[in-house]
Length: 71
Image (cartoon, rainbow, N blue to C red):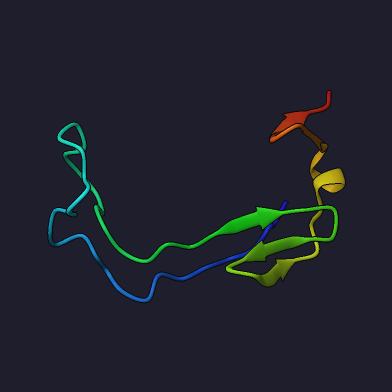
């Protein structure tokens, strides 16, 4: 189920990031932070609605500060 799409504005994989841990030895290591959020109202990327998919549609329920999957 689609919760949104996001395209990175650039390829940031050419340098090691300042806070990159030693165990991380491949892939993109710094770049742009994108916040993904799925709520009862819909799916959002950086505060903008990316899709109408909700927690209920995904079978997820908020339990304190984490989500749980219903079977």
